[in-house]
Image (cartoon, rainbow, N blue to C red; front, side, top):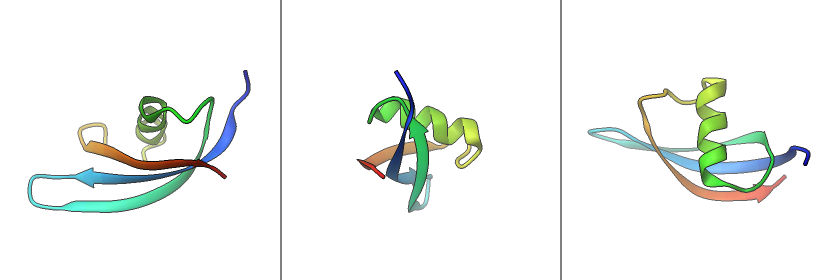
Length: 59
């Protein structure tokens, strides 16, 4: 299995606010858990943040 390029739209939720963002990442599949792990591994989002995946599409 090889990684492919995916566009991930997500929301970062905090105690008082929420922020929507997107990133292009290499994933094995369009899996929410894999996308969150990759975003946190890259440092795009903090490891302690709550992340909600809104959409994953092949780039």
